[in-house]
Image 1 (cartoon, rainbow, N blue to C red):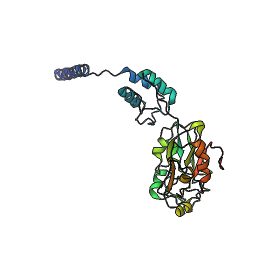
Image 2: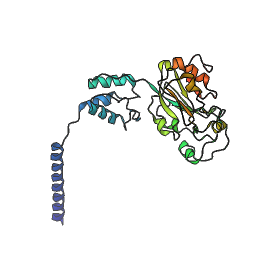
Image 3: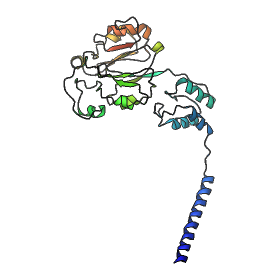
Image 4: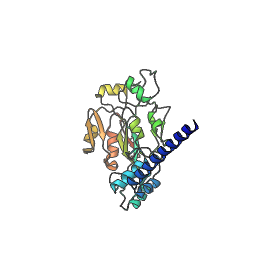
Amino acid sequence: MNNLMLSSILSLSGVGVLAASILYIASKKFHVEEDPRIDQVEGVLPMANCGGCGFAGCRNFAEAVVKAGKLDGLNCPVGGAECMAQVAHIMGVDVQETEPMVAVLRCNGSRKNAPQKTHYDGALNCFAAHALFAGESGCPNGCLGLGDCAVACSFDAITVNPETGLPEVDDDKCVACGACVTACPRDIYELRPKGINSKRVYVACMNTQKGAPAKKNCSVACIGCMKCVKATESKSVSVKNFLSYIGTDVDTESHGPQLIDCCPTSAILGVNIEGSKNA
């Protein structure tokens, strides 16, 4: 019995040593040297792993940068210009300056502007509510106010205002990672340039209904009246499916006040736009 046990132990040990030897030889034969710059690039990244760069994590972004050998189309929104300057130095390339971005909620359907018509009694998240009904105000495109975006934000940049029922974005905390854009089932978040001196103008509405139904559900809904298009004659302003859109390249200095003042429903909002009636 003892001899049998001893021979079994020796046999298993021999198999283990043989397998280890094969694995060792294989690892040496097929070993691929990893570019040390990957670790260097990863080391200067903020390690937020937010996905704002378009990759699963900071390590994946570092690998993509080294593989590409350049920074064209590659940017870390969390690290910003300073971080990308360090990455460019490691890669030995010129850094491309990118305009700072910020998340914008394209809805102004507050409790005052879009009064409650029905009561939602279900799971308290926007994804479930969106699947079940149009919304308490009746607007099929408006913000549901249940805070999926705030939960998704890793930087505490979004909070839901209990008075208005709408999320608010803190420009100073927002890193434009895009988590809120992905989390919102109604696609009412947009990443837009912060603008020179943080001046921005945009349409705070996503309702594609015709004017009368849209106004019935929300007093500040866009009605597709075309007045914004006529007021500026800018190619940056357009109306499609009864909904106006102001491009990010619009001249806020000259057209900002015009766009805000011409809107009969106050669907166009401005940030730091002087000279308008809503300034």
